[in-house]
Image 1 (cartoon, rainbow, N blue to C red):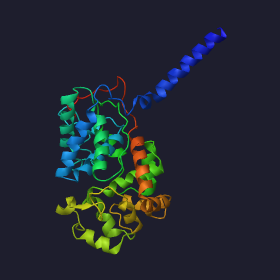
Image 2 (cartoon, one colour):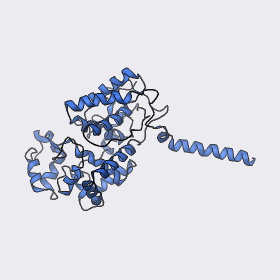
Image 3 (cartoon, one colour):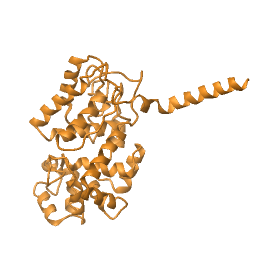
Image 4 (tube, rainbow, N blue to C red):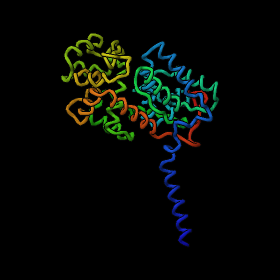
Length: 322
């Protein structure tokens, strides 16, 4: 083979390998809908604003939906699919059952966007945008959302049960879980700041407030008032993850940890004499550093295994495949 022909062949092979390894990231862009649906962001924002104004807590739920989507086989909208007699989705997986919510808001968002640009914007991308808008509306940072994901035609209840970090996880388990998703320890600590908003059920923090010693005494007393020591009717009683500012996205989550007021075992594990202590101190003392790292981690999480190009589909209804 002539040298020039050899070069062309090698160049072509190299390009093919690069495409195979990196085409998903390359196809995600903040400008993905700039021509096909330039008003997509406006449609999403108006619906999220309406929902959050009626119930500020729904913002935390919308942010959580994006987490629970991305950590289970990638950011592909699979968490939105309803169960049917012939299809098992992820909504009834243990971490989601009677806990994941905000699906009606996504329905409204999808309906609004479909009126402007039918069949263009994926449900997976709508989850990414609503998560960002929810954080901003509750006082948190903004970031440029990369778009171009397509929707899965499948879901995995088993993966949802095994891939999502548990409230009972220790630090080693948390680091491992995030590493499996391609996220660093810094991403773990920054993204955990999402617990600056939202609530948790008594069943998920009972063991911490009754059995653990790295717990502020007065904080424990407050939480035990609405969370009985034994399983039963009180299991679903709710408590704010951040006692100080439960519907404001800020860095008080980290100051709580410094004071041993983390509600979940997995929260307090970030400040428990381990490798993440210094980062918790940094975020507690520097809101700007937390905001910057959180935004960067959200962008990175949004890159987890997206379906792009001709993979998947753009659902007409986020609850079911086309």
